[in-house]
Picture 1: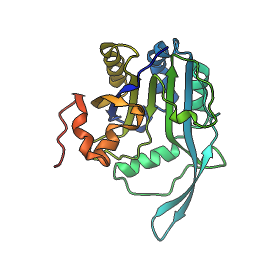
Picture 2 (picture 1 turned 120 degrees about the horizontal axis):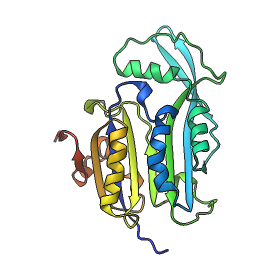
Picture 3 (picture 1 turned 90 degrees about the vertical axis):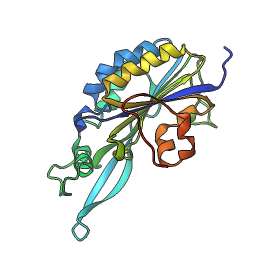
Length: 246
C-alpha cells in the first residue's frame, strides 16, 4: 500500500463540568468506544498506550502545599486495541480519583488542604498523564530503533496531559486526533471528529491540514503556548472565535 505523509490534526479543546466527566474514566470511555471501534476494526495494527503515574505526597507545613515524587504505574506497555484491554487500562488504577479531585480544586481556586483520603494503592495516588490510541492499515512490526509512541500511523487519538494550560480559554481537557490525509475523505474525517467533539464536552474545535510527517506533534496547544507564529495555520471550525493577543 503506497502512502503519502501528509496529515490533518484536530485539536478538541474541552470544558468538562466536573472531574468525573473526564474521558480517561472508564464510565465515559466505554460510551465513546463504539465510535472509535468503528475505525479500529479495519486496522491491521491497532494499539493502546497509556502513561499513568503514582504520586507520593508529603505535606510541607511551611509552604502550605504538597511535595510530590512520581513513579511509573505499569499499564502493560503498548497493548492491542480491544474492549477488554481498554477497560483494564482505565480501571486498573483510575478508580482512585483522589489526586485528580485535589488538582481540580486547586485549578478552581479552592484553598490547598491536606487530603483526608489515603491512596488506594500503597505506591501512591494515581495521576493520568496521557493515553494514546493509534491504528494503521498495514501490519506494523515492533522496531527496536523506534518506540511505539513515535510511530507514524494512519490514525492517532491522544488524550493529552493537561494541567489547565489553557485556563485562559476555560479548557480543562484536550484531545488531539490526527489522520493521514489519504485515509478516509476530509468530509468523513470531519464527521467522525465532530461526533467525538460533541460527546466529550468540546468547546473549541481547531484543525490544521497538510502537516508533513509527525502531524501529531503539531497541536494547537503547542501553537498557543510556544509556537505563536503557527497559529494562523489553524482553522477554528467550532466555538466562539478565539482572539489572540498580538
